[in-house]
Image 1 (spheres, helix red, strand yellow):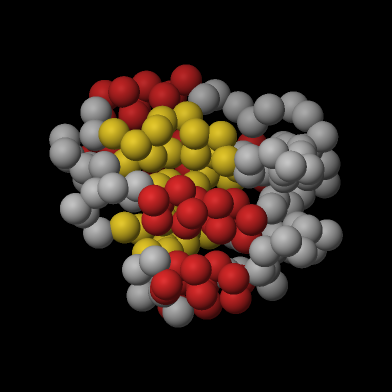
Image 2 (tube, rainbow, N blue to C red):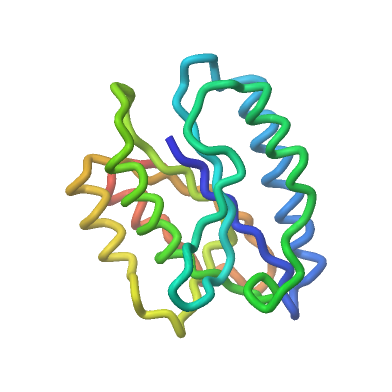
Length: 172
């Protein structure tokens, strides 16, 4: 299982992105403490916008089952990087999902495979390297469910990816 945690500073929505960041951080910490168990095979990655040719994902906890280490990794990641790739109001969401699908598809585990996307669900329209249809096709081909948890703030209501969850047997 991979948790994708959107990590933005946003120019126009800076306060909202800060609230989003801390909301998802607390959600992850609560999930680790109350739902996950030793033996679960989990990775946690943050994402924003990508630099050409680089990875979309920053794994703060690579696949493992030590819930104490997971919690510490989430707690220690205390703010989004302050750089051109995170100071946006949108992320390379579809590209990040695609990369997580690729990573999870080659990860060996007996457990079901799923991705949980924690995001405002506002994709960078300038990055056409991946789309919702690509995410759906790749997830279904690799038998990976995609679940979405949206942080919805004013002005973002029209942006959503719940159709990806619905078409990969996930939940939104």
